[in-house]
Amino acid sequence: MNLYVLRHASAGVRRASPTVDAKRPLDKEGKEQCLLIARYLNAMKVQFDLIVSSPLKRALQTASLVGTEVAYDSKIQISDVMSPAGTVAGFQALVTSLSSHENVLVVGHNPNLTEFLGSLICAPRPAAIRMRKSSIARVDCSRKPGQLMSLVDARLLRQLYASATKSSRRKTSRK
Image 1 (spheres, rainbow, N blue to C red):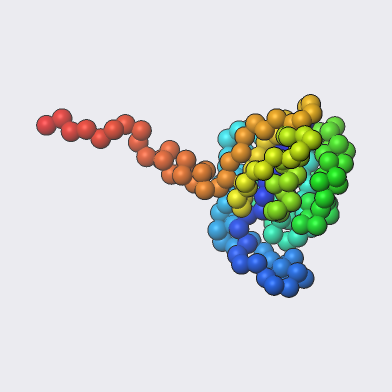
Image 2: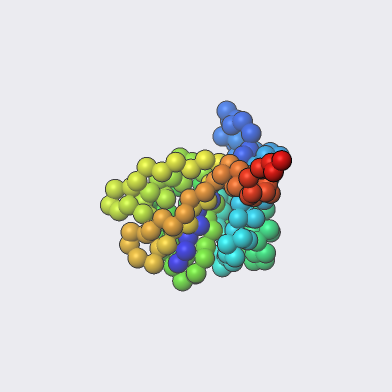
């Protein structure tokens, strides 16, 4: 199984009240980040069998926007394991239950998302991995521990796409 671990996109400033913060939507930059990630996944020709998201609004919006852009037409599965209160043990159980699928996208939050990713690739002690907003990691979970195949974020993709539109030839004068 290829597990794609995606941190939700930019959603502005964190709110003091947990109830209000749970309803915080993506901002304009976050929506652009989702499109960059989806463009990257489309370039890699990734088709998801299942998308699992945290119940918080910003994660659901991220999952929905990316899913729409990569032509995912099934319902997004919501799991409390992917919420900020999720545990590594719960995440491991979720991954085990998803092992019958080929490509799965999970969308969640920091700080536990980095712990989840670390627990997949570095057993028995989790690795410390930094995931910026709208970072996506691909982990090959066909054996234990999993193998980290890629880790990119929207900042890197924005730079790559900007440089790809410029000519790759050096400017030289023949006077």
